[in-house]
Length: 206
Image (cartoon, rainbow, N blue to C red; front, side):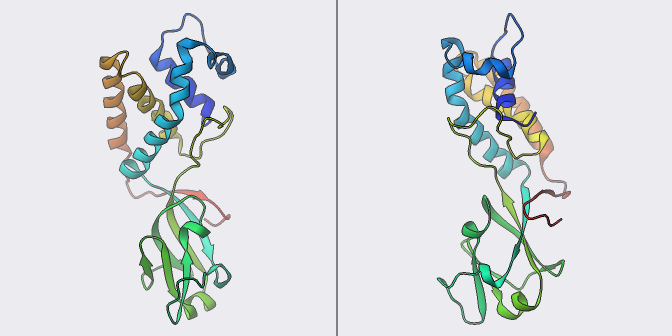
C-alpha cells in the first residue's frame, strides 16, 4: 500500500462513487477518461504538498549517514575543521537532527545555514561520525510510475489521500473536501512526534 498507484486510487475513491470496483490496473485507462483525467493530472502537485506538510508539521522522517574525511569539501574552509556540504553529500537532505561520535551524541560542531557542517579534524580522523538528518522522499512527478514505492511510513501513506482529495475536490464538493481536510488535520495532530524517532536506513547503520 505504499505505491503511487495505491495513493492515486485511494484519492480517486474518496472523490467518486464508482458503479464498479476499481483497481490500480484501471489507472492507465482512467487517465484518458475525462471524468478522472483532470484529477489524476493534478495529483502529483497535491501529493508533494501534502507530504511536505506531514514532514514539517507532523513527524520528521530521519535517516543516518556516515561521514569521513574523504567526503569533506575544501570549498568553505575553516582552519582545523573539516567541512561537509550536507545537501551535496546526503540523499534527500532537509535538516540536520544530530551528530553522533562513536555512538554518542556530539555537540561540538558548527552548522552554517543548515548546509555546511564543520567538525574538528581530530574528531573526524580518530572517531566514527554518523549524522542523523530529516529527509524526504523523491518528488512525485507526471513520470512517476504507478508501482513506484513512496518512501514514507505507512501512517503517512494512509492519510495522504485525505489531503489530496481535500485539495482537488474543493470546486466539486466543498463540504466533502472540508471533511477530508479536517480528518487530515486530526490525523496530523495525532502524528506529532512522541520522540520514538522514525528512521530510514541509508547505509545499513541502525
